[in-house]
Image 1 (cartoon, rainbow, N blue to C red):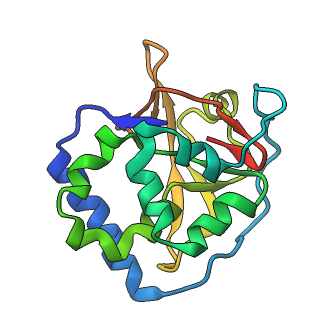
Image 2: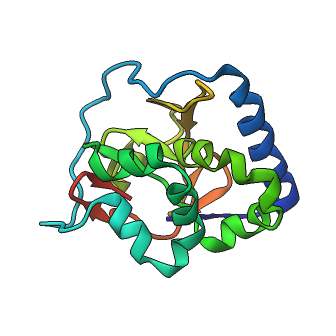
Length: 178
């Protein structure tokens, strides 16, 4: 779970919308591109819910859950695919984007897939990849792959792509990790 830090909401929302809209020109299929590296397992034991169920039950993630609900395809992936990681923005992070719902409603599925990574990327694996660009094997309909660059700051804060601060990590699910 993360929220942006030190970035203009207008700029962040505009950039996300540009990536989503630009990517929709390519209507590919969701498919794995290459094998993920060996990663560590979630720290929590015996999870009882899948990623979709966990996100849907958390009021602070309700906007992202709404994006998932808008697409049977995204919902199916978060319920049934194994060994995945989803970086879920909080409601605070998504509110500026959702303030113009009509402009984004056709792009909510792509929003979900831009936050999806193959493999189980727990906090230790992300910290070990400090500064390295990580390419996801999953591609949404835009055919854009998701890329993240984790960075451990001097005060031990984990940032993703220079602006999204991880505020809660290693939420284990039966099919992956949040």
